[in-house]
Image 1 (cartoon, rainbow, N blue to C red):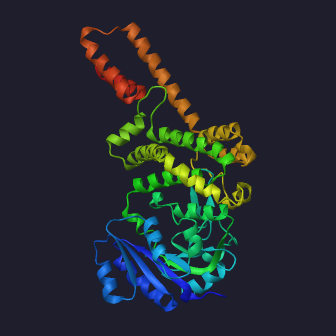
Image 2 (image 1 turned 60 degrees about the vertical axis):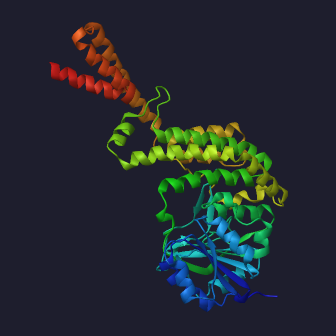
Image 3 (image 1 turned 45 degrees about the vertical axis):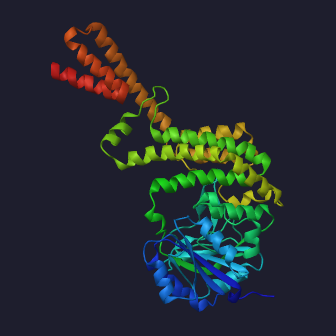
Length: 441
């Protein structure tokens, strides 16, 4: 028996999105769904009053506080009366054929991803998906003109902002993992569908229009990047099969720590901040704040995942019990598993060594990745120049100290030099000493 729009429960999550609902709801009503469910995440605007006054037939579920994306959709799915769930972000509007064309995608799979265009309908916002092997997801063709792109029949995961899924399949899988809060929960869901023996189709003619991550713009960049780093780790730990996860997860932890050290600007050999990082921080340069915050985000993400391990391992056990398809049949859907997430030749070379040491070169094309790395600058070379300059400065300081031992009157300047070296690095201290010497002479 073929399905129709009257079998569909449309679900949207709202947080202070009254102005978005004014565009979204009128685009949904003509589609004839069984019901429209709005889950409100503790809005303090007049979203609920607007819905009750203007659209009294819409079902409104309320959270007292902002529960992110996962819990509200799970809440709505549990109460939905339709056989099919159609998820759509509140800052979108639907094409008149969104549901009709999406249902065709469900004829061959229990879940279908919809094509997302920008508000004007000319550029791509989602046209399929790819996944880096450490769990970092990417939406394909963002910003490209619609007429310039092609698409795949199947994708690893849908975008949770616009997708259709069989309600029973969603419930059987456990819905979205609520520990994700937001970001990559759709990656995890799609991967679980494939693990369980299902497929995720892509319906290019099931179209919605997106204003552009307006909810995320209300959140801090640091919070979003923390969720990204943490949820990438959650995703790979849950969904790789045993042999793969035993090799990938250690690499993921090691590289997260490496990226944290790299972002922080800490020199391992002397344990102080790089001079340029410290000077940028003192100057309130936002780029330096971002780098240091991202270093902390990596570390907090790792610490959170380790803290969550008992619960995570139980979730992993349930996912693996559902396994009907091996990794070897899923990895092709990643499309670009060795996409660089740090564009630095030295970092990628060390990453390749780790991959080869743990035998992951049997799964991923590491040799091709090495070739790709040559396109990026080698920051080790720049570091070598910096160290050479420091050594020259150190030689000058040593020679000057031997020829001109510090006298009582100059000991305070020598102490200033040592303090500057300790707190700001040798280059900075040497420059201050040289400037002091020139003033004295």
